[in-house]
Image (cartoon, rainbow over all chains, first blue to last red; front, side, top):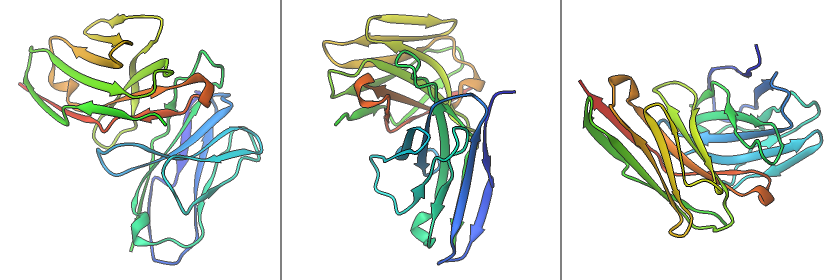
Length: 114
Length: 113
């Protein structure tokens, strides 16, 4: 079944650790996005990609980095986690056709940095 | 850049009543307006969307209206049910900016049985 997958779903980690949040989609979509969301609050775009080897920073400044080596895979990395990074991270994708901008979301990763 | 304001932040209605959530946007070039529903602990899910060449769209108990002149759009839910309780987000997008979505702040809807 076509879907967006995120791992891990929950992560508790100590300050200073390097972490990578995984996002994969089997939707066949070109565009992928990362959002940061505190529970029940506004979604903030932190990174996006229009295709392989394309990455852009979003509207919310983030210390994380992303890569897009394969169409279906869009991992997000924090080199040194801090308590201020505690949040939920949502991955999304869309077709990329200018008439099909609907974004579909993954289940999210809840990150707690101690 | 685009800015989307959403009101109210919380809304409580009795089962069977109607609920209306309003959003305003700042960029007149915005031309795609989706609405997402996010239940507690779940991912946001698209419930309805509207494009700028349409003034109103309905899907069963849900409708969205768009006023391009005033730059606002609204979500209408009729005959509300307890399972409609969730956080609802509006968003706006501009084609020539790569389809990025700018989200509103969210409305927590509570439907009391």
